Length: 268
Image 1 (tube, rainbow, N blue to C red):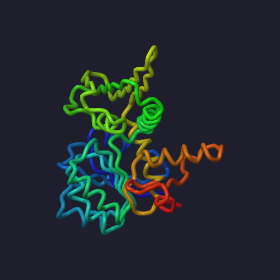
Image 2: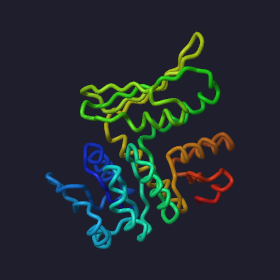
Image 3: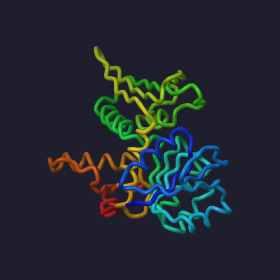
Image 4: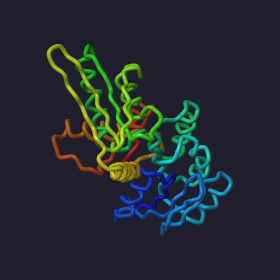
């Protein structure tokens, strides 16, 4: 059983907490957030503060931390996590460049996965879109993202898709509507045909199942900074080479910033 601490308890964090609490492979030990929690919850809860968090970790030790809070939080807890060799799965939509540099530095000492969207489906969409882009670099590409009315910024996932496909953010169309959790669509325009890759988040619990998958995979790896792409690429590569059915908990090797050859020994 993997002991997990959750940072961030908004709508997504609450859904992740429900999934992890019901999964016998995990023990959800505590929740940390930026401000006092005005809700009834049975788990220990703390306010995330740089000065007090190390003592909290010593009082409530965990194997992994999952971050669904904000881009500044890692600067508050990063060193405490590094010193205690705790795995980190970050699902923050976007980090400033200097914070990304800090996360890469954490990867020198601990296992870190950073993904702006941690659902399995959206990451498979990005992998499929990347493959189609390589096959047909001449195709027109448009990206549509739709989210709940209260989301102010452009989707970090949509920006990641644009970056992956090497297209400008101007190719992203954003809509904010009631009743939508999350919708991402990539449209490829060919002569005489179009291809649409679509992912819909039906419930926020999808973040929880993706988080569980990420934590289990990260537990097999050596220190390094990993992405969801790294998992899926190695799983697909193994399938293509062996022809055997994929195992959901199979090890994977490719940390960000390493060549394939360098990454071979990163995970068991």
